[in-house]
Image (cartoon, rainbow, N blue to C red; front, side):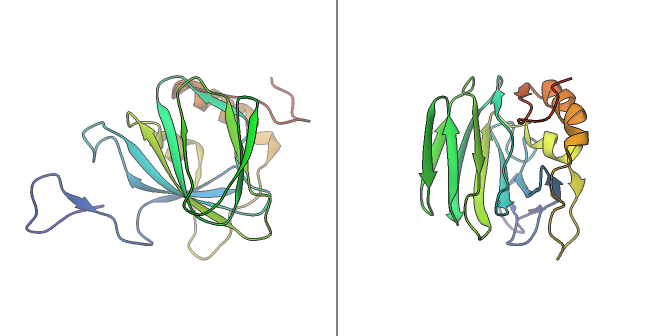
Length: 168
């Protein structure tokens, strides 16, 4: 992220392909805006979700979440409802809503994720592994679920264990 030369104080620009990227649960998340860069207003991530990818069921207690699908298809479950989300679709998830998504397609999906207020984007940096350009994210390793669940609590979220993984 860089200051826009000649712009007003606090104006930043993050170009396509820029921003720190982290692998988490088999997906790649690139930070585009942080609580620090937005005065606490929001955090923004660009996600690349491979076929079969997506996070386990989770709920945020401190922030609302929204996403806008850029490419591909995601199957989103929020509460008891499941829907297919296509490019151009926008989803708003109020805090306290249990939700998750998966990519049912054979192609990667790309989406922008907002969390407001900002701060939750730090979770991806702390819980993820720095991504290496040109390499796909490694698949989710169930052995890391305990650490993921513990870190999520620190950030005001609760992640439910996927089926077949002990919740300990």
